[in-house]
Length: 395
Image 1 (cartoon, rainbow, N blue to C red):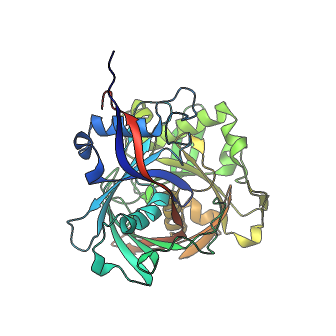
Image 2: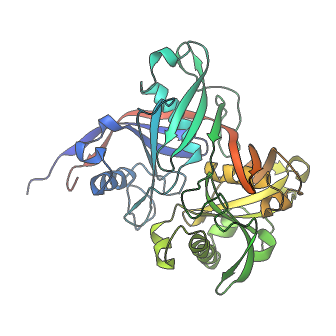
Image 3: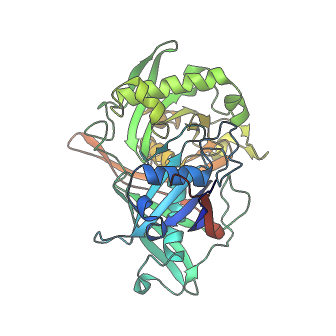
């Protein structure tokens, strides 16, 4: 029986922030995968190695975690004042689907660097030495991101001394600006879909939880750690090793998604794993990070833990950091109250791998809160480049 040969597709494997993904130029994809649809989804699942009932991604490029089961497509942008269009796909590990419902903030960092590496930015906009501002249109959510990428001798500078908790080695710092990151188009007419800074969310089997539900960066449901029996200092093994706890968070996520208007029925939550995120917050406390580093309550403003694709994230989802910074800047939200209340334009929060600083500029206009931009620093670098190969059957 004859079998189709493997496809050979130009690709780049990159780390961005605390995530990794396989990056493609749109024009390098097979014709059928250059447009949204089944062919593209099948290709990306095969590249990553999903669905994998063993949960290992042995036969693909994925790392069997939400942070490493990702694919990215970039192309030149025809939009005024933008250089590139960036589309992100979160590949499910054990189910046959790709979630296109949100962005990856960590890989937004790598998107800026990849745009320069891949020749997608007009040469006249690239400095020989300095910082190049790559103007990115984030196609999943229809928002602008500006990545300030260091350049040396006309090429992306990847090495440096910037340290990011959750990443083993230092690299060059890339500053990200998320412009007008609130998503008013999904779930409601403002970045607070219910119109409230705090809501009572009735979750069967759990009870009524105080929540802040916000649609900025990525849709996120914030809850108080103490309301679900946690301290906010937990590491991955505490949460991810307990199936009952994970099931509880998924129920909270599904009911939050329904309340936010992101889904029409609870059953739809299973096909929308990437969004919303669930995060729990607490006041500052001393703890030891996953690397063994001691984090003092004096160096942080609050504690945050976030779940991604059904598991506690090892550090922090980049887009959730945008939600954290924005919510913290608005007096009265659960995030703001955990950070001590009051007005604040930036803060440092503790996550399982250490700490992260994030800033946001929010203000009230005609009775509605709006956020002008949010910012944070990450790093990115190429891990491998060349071609990725996938069996051609069915693609």
